Image (tube, rainbow, N blue to C red):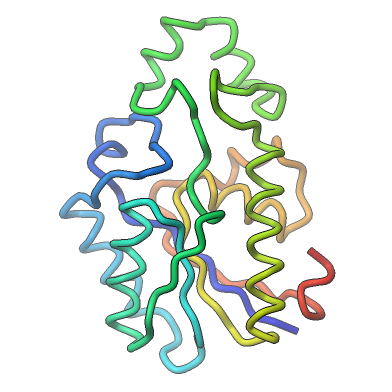
Length: 191
């Protein structure tokens, strides 16, 4: 059995403006960095053996802050990046709604049925995250690890680990979420 800790990145400058985060990410806002440091204080020091994060700026900054607290080295896993919004990256929800009202409505009601122009579907993102998680769990031989993820990636991985449909990810996208943990059976074979 492996214990997986999931930590969401702190708020970013784009998040403060309600913009769709890009895969490259944005820097943490001052408030976001402060909340990450406070959340890191609550993590079980000594239990977590490795930290993995996507290559985005917020993931990298969040992982570095936590790694300093836990005295670990943060590792980059490119497939842990935030959801790929494609041409929607950097737009506010109001801008998306104004530019593509039908697609926006579908995104709000049945998000799994939508591919943002030039982006990925929720299923594709979740599968990418699943493969990355499976590889990490297998490679760490069941050691407790911490994944640092953007908000949508966090929602998708939480749906996966709780056995919920991808359309329920909205229930797990919470900008104030800090971290949680899951027990995964076996060496990740169940993923």
